[in-house]
Length: 373
Image 1 (cartoon, rainbow, N blue to C red):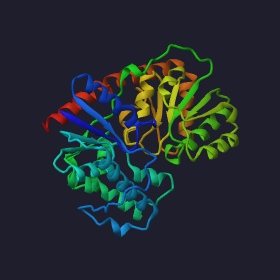
Image 2: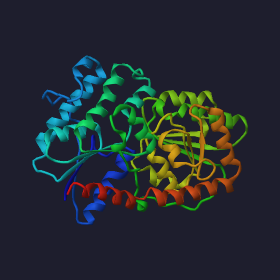
Image 3: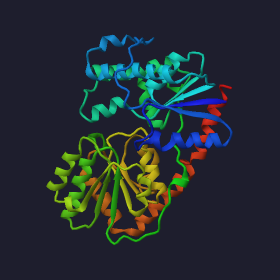
Image 4: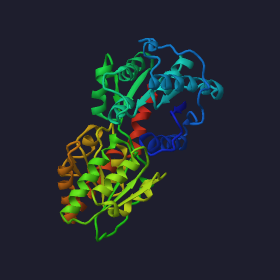
């Protein structure tokens, strides 16, 4: 079979898509499958002019809103770029973003189109303070799930909790498949080491949705209790200046290192002890599985896909969203008890190898693809 993996933007940023799809393509190609990668270059802006029509709702009711207008223009740009660059037919198109899925079905109506929804754009915008819940932008973005259900051949998502979230916006959520992300173990090389001071690491885009304000306040509590640590923050984003200011206010700036963006953080993570990310929402939370494969203890919030990966006290620790004090107590546990920390990390590694292997994803996707032969 000849299969197209259609991404949104190129796989250059950390996250579930970048961590998985290129490796899936490589593995399938080695097994003799024909598979190609397609995406919209970030430099393409304002090129598309073709009118956009959805079958389940009239998007023009939401026109004039900057976020909606930008989304529609990006849709038009994706149409323009796809028409320009794709000249051959495929047996299956597997899209990894709603725009990619809807455009591909519009331009290739006879080709089976599968869409994996990796995250919730609207929830991220709400948590980052850019739109209001139930506002016009929120309504528009959630209506797209119903459009996908009506037009594409198969919807997949990355966790049971995210499938439950989508159920409010589709007619039949039972038709949505769940395939958790998987990772190529060869990318991860755990390193035996002994750090005299506990090293925390987090990897994410620096936006309010990731809850790093909660993490810095929790680390401030640790500092006031006399507990030593170093916090390594990998990633960049609009909240960086605000977070650096908060680190100063919490008197932990000298204990915190802001690295900025890093292309392959998994090469860096094995040297640390604890991965911590108090996200306010996560559809899956790929970076937790990646950290587990680096043999790190995990500390996260009891939300979404994080809670499906971590069994509290067994392979990591879960805390409530936005609760800096409880987070500080969880971090204290892994500071003062290295044996407990080691056991959490070992169990997390064992689960990740078993549950989030790339081979498991390949088997599940192969089963999906073969339905359309």
